[in-house]
Image 1 (spheres, rainbow, N blue to C red):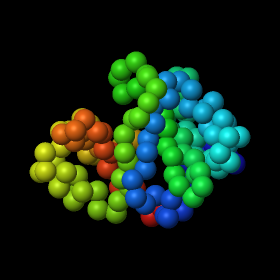
Image 2 (tube, rainbow, N blue to C red):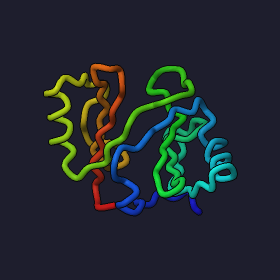
Image 3 (cartoon, helix red, strand yellow):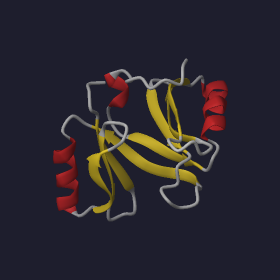
Image 4 (cartoon, one colour):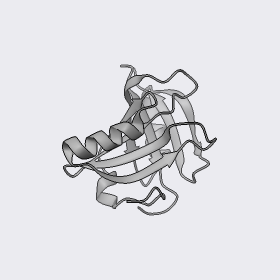
Length: 138
């Protein structure tokens, strides 16, 4: 496995993907999940500013995807559930529908520095949802 970004198999980017906040321990968690649950690492990206920790990590456990980060979104990092991730071909349509239904915008849906369109919403129940449209097919 390398730390270079790769596009995972499309089947791993379907459904709803849990995205965990790991409070600076995402790399440690990746190694633990490999030992404990036979996780395969797909992707592991360092913080873009050279800060310690991982901006993003993606694992496959028993055929399903788990994502995690050390990034706190401007707040002190804490453990726990980060958000649910939707990787879709028509991100703007998913985004607009969710906003029209009553989701609050936490981070606008726009092109990110890594090349994909992404935004973060919060539903009326306090659950955060990210909508991601990849810049190229997975």
